[in-house]
Image (cartoon, rainbow, N blue to C red; front, side):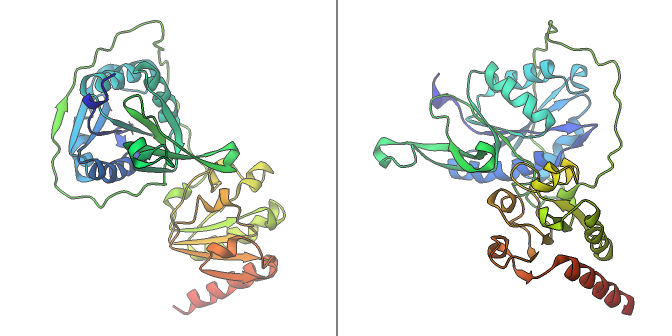
Length: 346
């Protein structure tokens, strides 16, 4: 493998039902940062059927080029045709970096494609940087301009930084919500490259008989501007009612820590943290949450963090902008009533 033949940062522009996913736009934003360090450009790869009109949106969010593979076989996501298409793009255009969102689709597609193109993949990354590898080597002995892929390991108890110095592309799946979208440049048009992938039906193709769309019953905490998050200290699933009352009063959404999900009090969709979702609300209430590193990693970028905990030594106070030490069963209802009283004056 001639590593010097591989240039550019590519991102997989995941779309479902003709709608580009949020993480696809986040990847373009991060891709621009990595590309600036390498002196290259960013190319988004858009797969689907009848999706060429989505290319301009990718350009508005920063893509320098958009490779479009438009084929009826790609109308709905299936592992084999999507893997053939993306592997075909990689083999033809030879990117040095290929980023995929760590969604249900990306976690299936990324490893499949990395095996096809004979390279490694770091899964569920929370940080990406350009630097030298090995990290502690003398510059003269290290390989420069490597993609350093950071992800939680051992159940979130440690952080690992991984590189792929001897193969290309350097591939990673990236957790939704951890990277920041660029402000869109309205009206920007895409430089579209149409690519006819060789999509050959084989015994790994599956036939989709029906698509049944489930109506989600839980809110998308990644889109919430105000989150009222509860931990084990809330005490019981019934006691989350006081958090729900606070959220209702301020127009927020309830979320939770891993301990709450493990206890079966709340669904996984509401979990914040390294093994849950990464959130960036304007205001984050951490109520009865100790502040373990696994949880903090998922919410530390919130604009304002307000912690309520009876333990004044709880680590959550180290990252909180405002902290209240005391019994949440008294503090939260009092706060809710005070907010309602203020709103009633308006």
